[in-house]
Length: 349
Image (cartoon, rainbow, N blue to C red; front, top):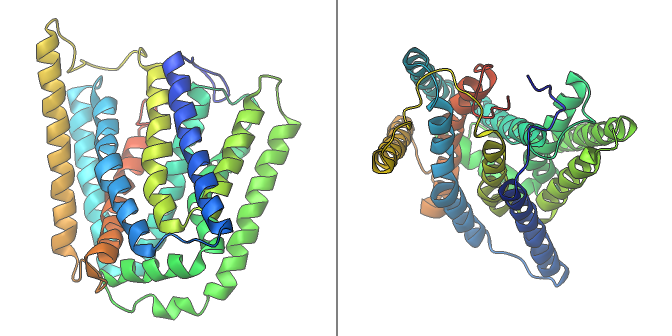
């Protein structure tokens, strides 16, 4: 079995996916940076629309596809346990927001960090390699540095927008509930910034000291610094909305292509002699997954006392979708990733 620092394999398609993801973020960073230097700003409404397009239209199908790919080659017993665990975590996520929406917000932030960083770590293992990450501590630092960029950097660079949308998110369940914590923002902001900077410097420092000559450190360092620059330059609402489709999803496609021929544990429900039959089953599973996700989103809407957080359709839509997708992503990460140690949504053999 491959260890955490070995490269599973790369193809031209894998490399193309990685280059597209990095090139997309770099281009956005340069364009938005140029606009800012010229004194131009992207209107908040336009950012919110960009978020909704990125997170709903572009990225949501990939989230369902990850579960589909994970369950393809599993036993029927496991599939039913997986679905049960997923639904249980969804119910727990909704309950948490109903009972303690501020804590729910904190969990949602944590889910973004774990999903982005954890997913990225497995992409490194499967594609460009991670020979410089020799210990569990280093791998945790790598995940925190990469995933943390999506939340820690905007908190420091765009605090007003971050806090404004955080208030709307909490208001979906309890208007004004974030106000008691708001008095501590001036304290938590520098602490988060200093803590995150320490994580990045420690990660890069240890990686440099333990580089193995394969070039994996240079790739990791370049991508980590690109993420930091992207979230420091591109306004937070737009940055988060485009990060998942342009970076996370594209890179997970590269990981899957690198390990696609890995053996499974049970019958592959796409296996068959007829190409038409395989295509029909794949279509049915994807439609079923989309409908299931839609039902979860509908359940969140019905459970939320104030679905748009008194912020109107566009800004309230961003807040509601942030809540809904965090509830969907919670079991995605916990059940599909952390608990499924044998394969999981980020599987690398």
